[in-house]
Structure formats: structure tokens, C-alpha cells
Length: 122
Length: 108
Image 1 (cartoon, rainbow over the protein chains, first blue to last red):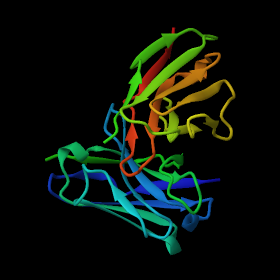
Image 2 (cartoon, chains in turn brown, yellow):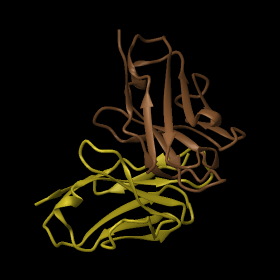
Image 3 (cartoon, one colour):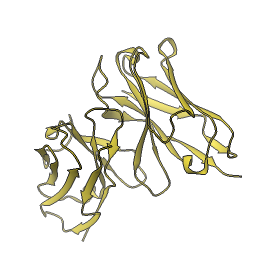
């Protein structure tokens, strides 16, 4: 069974940093691209960032480019999101999501974690 | 960037009704379109990809169609468990990825 478990969320002041983690199991992690998608309270879905299976291809939404860094450790079956210079508008539930196609980066998502809540407020 | 516009934003229908949700892209995206279902308080679930391919395990009452700029998600016979918000998502020429704003479906 595919499982994606996010951690690292919390309350943080504007301008500070936070690092999210996603622990994956139930599939061959290093066969798949992985992504972060967020959802502000009561709002829709927003793709944040994605990384290919070998970290060779990385993408970011314009809203986070230059502030967030995605990475992965295939030996640990883990995905990360380093978030710097956080803003109030970054407040959201952050989901880890698995790309649907192996050995590719198709940018649609067949499994999602339960999410970790990030609240940016003074 | 390509914008995705869903209509309606919300709708109410009766059990057994045929329900159609529309998603329009601001530019052609071929068939690079996915649909997700998000039930209240739950995680999004992939329903359809490549505009019309049903994800494994999704009930056959769900179907998708379209190509280019205009797409539809159809529920052939609405069930109570289909209450959810539905999102379309384009994934051609990614990044960026764009989701529609969502369509909230309720039972009348």
C-alpha cells in the first residue's frame, strides 16, 4: 500500500524558515517523480514544486521560486521542501504527491499524503 | 501562463441525475488534463487523466471527454458519496501546473 506521510509543519513567523519532510513507502520511491501541492484554508489546490526521480529535473511555481527548495533522498525514501522567507500567503496545508508515471515527470498525481499544516503568522 | 476555468463553481443535483462539469483552458493543451475529486476533509483523489482515461478503481459512472481547450467531467448517475469538490488540472508544458478553481457538488 502506498503511503506518504508529511511532517515538519507548524506555526512560524513571517520571514522565518521551515523544512517539510515526506516519508514514502509501499512503492519503489526512486522510480517516481515527486511533488508538493498546497491548499490554503478553504481554497483550491496549488502546485508548489516537483522533482524528478533522479533530481535531474526540478520545477517551482512562480510564487515560491527563489524561496523554496525541493530535494529528495532516495536512500531514505524521503522528499523534502525547504521553505525560506515565509510569508502569510504561504499559509496552507502542504501535500506530498506521487507522480503517476514511473521513470517520467508527467505532473499529475495518483497518491497524496494527508498533508502538514504550515501557518505563517506573527 | 495557461489558465483553467471551471463551470459551474457549484451545483446541486439529485441522486441519479447526470451531472456535467466543464473545464476550459485559455490555450490548447491537447489531452493533458486530469480530474480530481476532493471529499470534505479528505485528500484529493485522481479520477481521470489524459482527459478521458479512468484511473484504476474509479467507478465507471465517472467519465471524461474533450481535447484542446474544452473538457468535461460527467457523472452518469449521481450517488450520495459523490458529494465533493472537483478540480481539473492541466499538465502539458509543465511546469507550471495549473488547477481549475474547483466545482463544489452537493446533493439536492
